Image 1 (tube, one colour):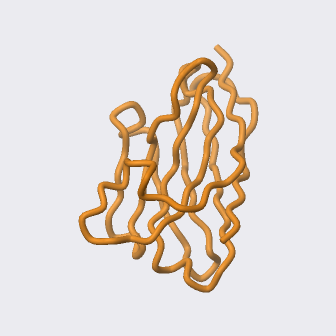
Image 2 (cartoon, rainbow, N blue to C red; image 1 turned 60 degrees about the vertical axis):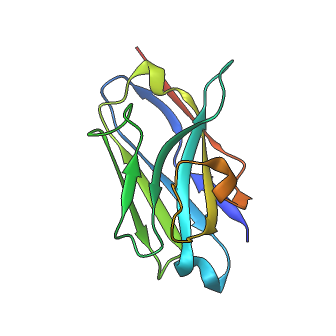
Length: 125
């Protein structure tokens, strides 16, 4: 499975971005997908996750209320709509894909087997 992120860029504080995650493979519809980010000098952290069906979504407290994750299994894509962006949202954003087992927490990196190269999001103040 190949995972490719897109949609990052430079945006002013208060602005919006939509990140896109494209994954290859016919089994995409059974995978959970997560978004993680890593800011300079910090560890990678969970941002948002979505179950295989899209019926369950998960958000870190830092983005809850400002972000919406969704998926289109027909297109093998997951989207992360981010609004009211803050300078502290600046980071490289990674998409990760893994089998959606019952009992998954969705915020743990070890639950994801395939990772993209990341897309840079920079929020200026």
